[in-house]
Image 1 (cartoon, rainbow, N blue to C red):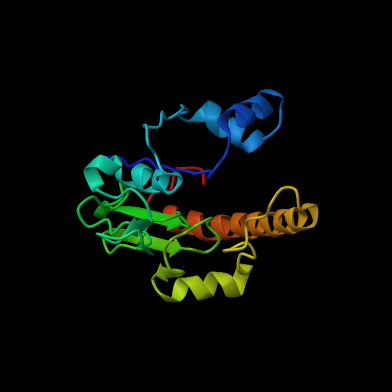
Image 2 (cartoon, rainbow, N blue to C red):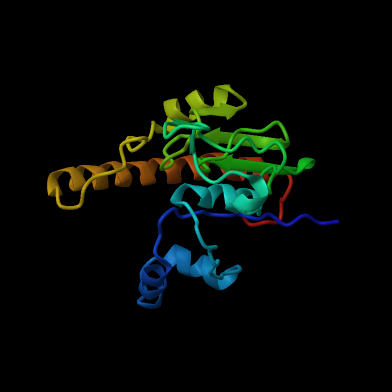
Length: 205
């Protein structure tokens, strides 16, 4: 059976109405091409959603009612004190791309998803994701430092927030994000095609 490559791109906090407007105006040409050639649709959120639950829900395909994971912070029982537990453990409900040895998979900087031994391929976590909720690292372990040595670290990791009324800080964040986007693009172009080509020689990658 022929296996077709699938690429999933997640845009954190991207307002769809603006993206759709800009694509219709001729901007965002790459996203527009992907939309035309692939599958596009809007996801409807559920009620009572915490802002930090979106990636866990996306990765598992399960609502917080099912996983029991509502947020990265929880109250200590019997008190009003809270503690941070970071990302969901993904033991009962693994990420949808944890497909074992039969499929070759690469994940790069997926927010709030832990590294897993259920993937045959490359994994990089907390390179430059917003609110990653996991420690920076990779599988294989040497990969993280290797890609930083070659393409650089993300200057926006844990430094991607500013109050919009503070123009100076906002412009600094914008500069970090622009640098990070260039390095992210170079990293993906460098690492993804060589990994996929042996399995998908006719993919055009």
